[in-house]
Structures are given as C-alpha cells and as structure tokens.
Image (cartoon, rainbow over all chains, first blue to last red):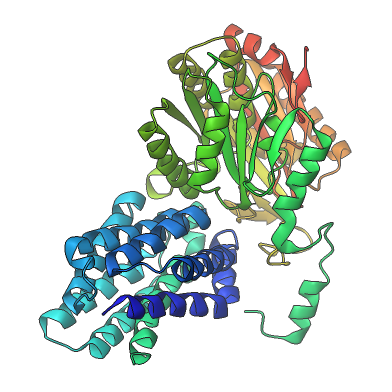
Length: 213
Length: 343
C-alpha cells in the first residue's frame, strides 16, 4: 500500500463520516452531547484538505499529518484520541514507513500501535463502551488475517466486520469512560458513537482497496 | 436519524438568534470583542485575553472549554480572575493550539495555571497543550475541577464533572495570583476551593444545540431531570415536577450527603441559561432558609447565569465552605465582563 491508497482511505473516511454525520450525532445525543458527527466531519474534512495541500511522500508521514490535523481541528475527546491513533500508527511505520510502500503486516502493526496509543491516553479497555470496543477486535482480525496469509481485500473485510460487530456489541454495555459514563445504567441500550465512527474507519479500508487502480 | 421531511422542516424552524449554526461561536466572540474593549479577542483563532497582555511576574490563569456555557470562561477574563480563555465549539473542548496561544497571552514569567473542568475531552486537550508549552519552557500546573455530586460512582465513570465551582476556583485563584502568590500557592488555593465545593443541578427542559436543532433529551410535560451536567447530557434520574422548596431540598441533600455542611458558605444559585431570574431568587430563598436550618451561614452569594447550558431551563446550586483566607480572596477586587466589584 502506498500514499495513494492511504489518501483514498482518508477521503473514504471523510465521505463516510459526512454521510453518517446525522446518525453519529443521533447516537451521541442519546448518551453524550450530540456533536460527534459534526466534530469528526470537520476533522476528517480538514485532514483531506491537509493531504491535498501538501501531499506527504511516505505512508508514515501521511498518517502523522492526519493525526496532527485531527488533534488540532476536532477538539473534544475524539480529537486527541483519533489524532493519537493516526499519529502513533504513522510513527510506528518508522523507517519502513518512509519507504513508498508498506505491506499489510506493516499496516496491521501500525494500527496496533495506534490502538495502544488510544488505550494509553484514554485508559479505556474493551467493555468500557468506547471506540476501543470496535478498534481492538478490528486490529485483532487484521493480525489474524495477516498470519493466515490472507490478501488485502480479505483482511480488510475481516477487520471491517469485526469493527462493526464490536460497535454493535456496545449497545447493551454500561459506559465506564467518557461522557456517557455519567448516565450509569441508563447508558445501556444505545450504541456507542465512538465505536460506530471507528467501524466507519475500518469499513473505509475496503472501499479504498476496491478503488485500487 | 433525520428520516422524514417533517423532521427536517422542524429543524429549520428552530428559533435561535444566530446567523448560521456554523458561525455561532465566531459571531459571539465578535460581539464580546465589540462590547468589551478590555479584552483582546481573536474570533477566528478563538482566544480571549486581557488587552494589556500578560502581567509581568504574575502567575497566569488560563481556562477553556466548550462554548455554550457563557459567561464561562471568556466572561471571566480580566483583572483578578483569568488572564486568557479559549472557547471551543459548542460543548466541545478547545484544541491544544488554542490553549498554547492562550498560554502565551497569559505567561508573565511566573508560570501558568490551567483551570480544567473534569471532562475527558478537556483533560486530554489540556494535557497535550501542557506538554507543548512545557517543551517551550513555560512552567505549567493544572487544577481539575470536579464538584458535581450527581456523578456518584467515580470509580466506574470518567469521574465527577466540573460545573459551578469553576467560577469559584477562577475567582479565588485569580485573586491569589493577582496578589503575587507563587504558582505552587495559586495551585494549592485552586485545589482547596475545589475540595471545599459541591454542586447539584436540576433541569426543567433540555437544551438545543444550534447544529442539531433538536433538544438533547426529551422531557414530558411534568417531567424533570435531576443531577444534570452542563452539556445537555441527561442526568442521574428522572422525576416529576415539584415546587422550588422541594427541589432546593433535593439539591442540598445531595450536596450535604457528600460534604457535610457547616459554618460559613459561599453559595451560588446558577441559572442554566433560560431560567427567569425571579425563579432563581425563589430558589435562592429556599436554599438560604434550608441552609440556615442546617446550621450554615450564607456568608457570600451569587444568583444569576454563570455556568449555563445554552437554552436549558433549570438551576444548579454550588456550595463552597469558606475560611477567612478564601473569603478575603473572594472579596478581592475583580473586573471582568461577568463579575466585577471593588475596583
């Protein structure tokens, strides 16, 4: 995968977030403060613009630019968290990320680093009803696919469906982190908006892959 | 989901005094700038600071948070209180870049204290900003405000929310800083005010954000929400409407249960944004009388809109147990758009 693939991925996330903006906001209204859709729309829109303004030469640099843009434009908790995810993913690519291509194994490793960054910053674990509930199973699915020698399409589809299942599994959970946690038991019965947006991010890997020249 | 045409039409019909949902924060900052020459306002960069710049040798105070809580925080920038504030989008924490700019506008060379309300977003963004500023050689300390007793189980949540006590922390720590206290001392005073303060809020209606155009939660004709936060998030439980006397008792019971009340107190009855002042005074009468019954003297008070939640109807009560030093610092001169006396 090269910078063109990653640029398509980020553009695909921005499109998906824009299309699902009202649904994300709706989910957030139920257990948060009704701004998740608007905030991510602003952030990923800015990331697409930043990549267009000054296209990075390497995958690692590209992911770091996306992370930095999210941190400086989104605000709230999702800005630092998603920003850290992309920034740490970019950092982990290190010297291999400065090459023009990264392998599926590299990307899996980068997303694992991104997930570690998120759990460190937000100190959330699976089951807390956060984006980690979609993020963690998706990274595991990607890693499993890599060790099984799967191709890109198969690996991305596995990650996307694991993220979606993870997001749906947050519905009965009682939130223990973030603003939804103030509701206690009343947070059950609603899908977590952060997990929902995380599922969109992994689904966009498939669309970026299909767009492969 | 905004599925039907009818719902979309309703959305367009929400009446708000705005030009567009996207420009509310910027437009309000333009207004703040036009109304208060004592402030330096950057409507696009989203920072507000004292027009005279940092005070050399004084500890700087910076706060910030989502917009929609006006006059918090920008309305408390000025002599005796904050040096700079950074408003985020509605109910959304500001970003680290704004905080770095605000820090530069507040840094008089004696260090800068961040007053941070305990919400995940505010905490994370201020942490990132503190790292950036520390790399630039500015000494940064932070105080977390978490006075809301409605959040009961702090171990299994993001912890208590910062609400009304933020005004007390900013005023009292601001006075300490103005008086020449060191960063360590100003931080200690801020922490003490927070430790001695508790709040509880009640909503009669939800609020409507400009972007969504719909109430953040639904309340029936006779329903109320107890233990609300300040972001239109639903509260601890739902109940039925009752009179001001009973509502004051519910709020004070919650506070008292968490921090036994005695002695002299600074008491605020705060409006959530769309509560008539006459009703806040009705509540204050009950609060004062019931506090007296519990052996507490209302030594200082505030009644009005200080930490709001857009157009929510309702109130919060904040009680801070005073000692002589804190009372002196509360009484010290202050000159900001929303709080001014003694100067």
